[in-house]
Image (tube, rainbow, N blue to C red; front, side, top):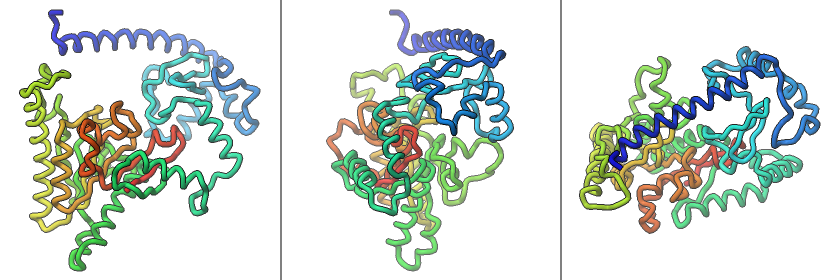
Length: 385
C-alpha cells in the first residue's frame, strides 16, 4: 500500500516482462529442438492434412527449414519477421484469439491488428467461402453486397453528415484517396486565380504518425519517414506538429493526479496540455495563410497507434478542428487501425475525447478512412465522406 501507482507500474511491468520472456524462451527452445528435425504436426483447429486442396499441397508439405530458405531468397528483407532474433514463428493457422504453429504449439495472439473478429470465425469463413463460390469481381456491376455494405458503414456514423463511401483495397489506398479528395475539394471551391496554388495544398500531420505506405502518405507519416536515409526533408506543403502526448511529450500532465475522479485541478492540467498542443496546429494554420498558401487538410488518428496508443487530451481535437476549418481546410480522421470499437467506449477513435458529449456533429470529420479490421484480414478498406 505504500507504493504509489506509478511505482507499482514501474515494478510490475518489468516483472511481467521477465516472466513472459522466460516462458517464451522455454517455448522457443522446445520449438527449435523440433525445428532441427524438421518435424511438424497435423494442423490444429482448422482441419487435417486430408482437407488441404491439391493446389496448396506443395506449400503445406514444406518443412520449416525450407520455408525459411524460400522466405530469405524470394521475399524482400524489408518485410520483417516477428521474433526473428529468437527463433521465427512458423504459424500454420489460428482460431479465435490463438495462433498455432507447425508443431502444434498454441500462442495468445497479442500482435494482431487485422482479424478484428478473431481467427477462423465460422460465420466469416462460411460467408467468404459462399461468396467465392458465386463471384468475386470489382464494383462496376450492381451487387447487393456492395450496396448494403456501404449503407451499413454509413449507419455506423449516424447521425452525421458522412454519407458517401468509396471502397478500396488497403489503408494506404484509403488515405491516399482521402488526400486526393481534400485537394479536389480545394480546387473545385477555389477562385480561378487560386487554382494552381490549390493543386499543392498544405497538409498538417502529427509527429510519430503513421498513415501508410504510398509516396503521398509516407510524406505525412513521420513514424516511417524518419527511418533510414531514403528521405532527407519533408515536402514544402507538409507541416508536422508535435504529438499530443500527455505522458512523455512537451506538455505532459501530472500523472500522479491522473485518475478517474474529476477535481478541478486535474481538468485544468489536462486542459492546459490540450491548449498548448492545439496551439501548434493553430500556428501552422496561421503560417500557411500568412504565406498566401492554401490549407488542404489536417489528418490524425484519434488514438495514435504505432506512435504508442496515444490519446490526445480532451478539447485538443475540438480546438484543432476549429482552427483547420477556419483556415479553409478539411479534417481527415484516419481510423484504419483504431476504428470499429477498438478503444472500447466508442465506435471511432476520433470520438474518444468527447464520447460523453451527445453526438456533436461539429466534431465529425469531413473524411474518414477505415481499413484493417474492416475486412477481418480480407484486403478491404474504405473512404467515407
